[in-house]
Image 1 (cartoon, helix red, strand yellow):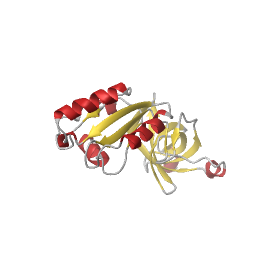
Image 2 (spheres, one colour; image 1 turned 180 degrees about the vertical axis):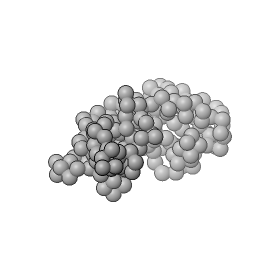
Image 3 (tube, helix red, strand yellow; image 1 turned 180 degrees about the horizontal axis):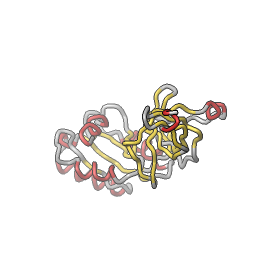
Image 4 (spheres, one colour; image 1 turned 90 degrees about the vertical axis):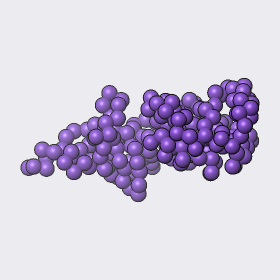
Length: 196
């Protein structure tokens, strides 16, 4: 009898992490994430039989919510706005394309490919150029103007300074589901560590 007292009806949630056949789901109330209400979930087998794959960013309905054990069952997957296959992320609102200006050197062709792929998802796309401390101020200004002509207002950051991240952190806090994309070695992990 005690167990049934901890179980409540169906709620809407956001998948925040996926590993093996388990998911962390945060309950959504009025479209706001309640991190204090994070549950370890498994999905119903019928979802897998329908060949619906659950990704980070998916909105789902969960049931059999046990507040004591922090567990629940994913009943169904709600409609997606978009999906990125690699990495598998759904319902993206914003994509930040990260590229370094040096080490590795800025590759315009590769950057164009990232921008085109991001724009095809019909989301807000922003450009962040890292390692600005490795180039002179005149080159930074040139790059800013160049990408402004492309239709972007790039954020040009030095990863060695801590002063430049407050605005980006605030901006990310106002977004719904943002991802960082870019080639290896451009400072994505360093940037994330600075703003978390």
